[in-house]
Amino acid sequence: MSDHAHPTPAQYWKIAVVLAVLTAIEVGLYYIDRELGLGALNAVLLLILAVTKFIIVVGWYMHLRFESSFLNRFFTAGFVLALSLYAIVLGLLGVLVIRGGG
Figure 1 (cartoon, rainbow, N blue to C red):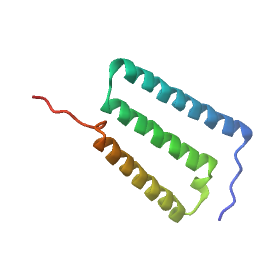
Figure 2 (figure 1 turned 120 degrees about the vertical axis):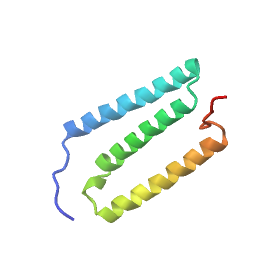
Figure 3 (figure 1 turned 180 degrees about the vertical axis):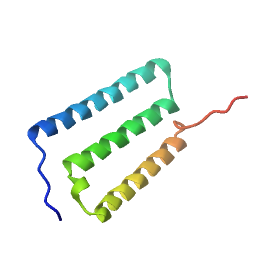
Figure 4 (figure 1 turned 90 degrees about the vertical axis):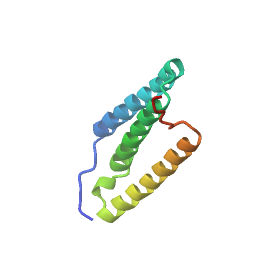
């Protein structure tokens, strides 16, 4: 494993602010969906935000970006499997139903 510079407290605060902003957007989407009924669009937007936050947390706080490619593939495979299962469950519950015209 190669040596790398440890992040400064300022860098951790910047990432924490980014994560807080993304969380605020998620909460805002929840309330917007209650008023407008966005349905599948809201679910997709929330999934995108969840993926983004996961990548930031794993890459930054867990220092995965400095690890071997095997470990990166291991985390990626687990996340893809979990996301796939989540999408299947949302589909079965009718949240990700795409309605055709007609």
